[in-house]
Length: 130
Image (cartoon, rainbow, N blue to C red; front, side, top):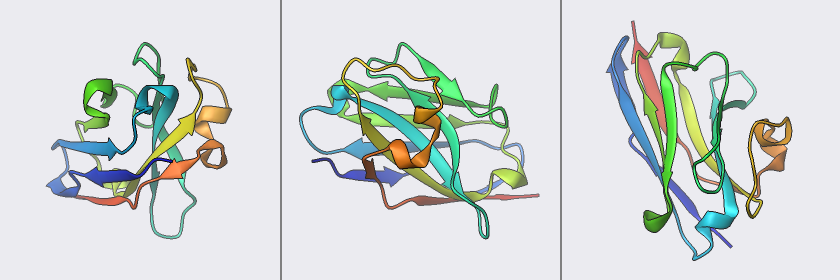
């Protein structure tokens, strides 16, 4: 069983950067595909990025490609989301999620779907002002 704790959210001006972190408990972190999702007020939770068990594969929503980078450090049980060139439309609560998939890849519909994921963090607010 894993617990996920996000940090790094905050208020930033458009064009700025933030780095989100997600610390996972447990000793089998490398067995999990990790994802970032976000949810804006009145909208459904949407996929942002995912990373395979060893970081060898990544996948991004079209809206963040070229601006966001997902990475992980299995020795630290941590996944990161570096967000650059932020826009007001990036404003949302950002959630870290874990899906048990040993040796698993990303890039398929399943890893873009919230219901696939087994564990979720509590979320961290990101607000981008114009």
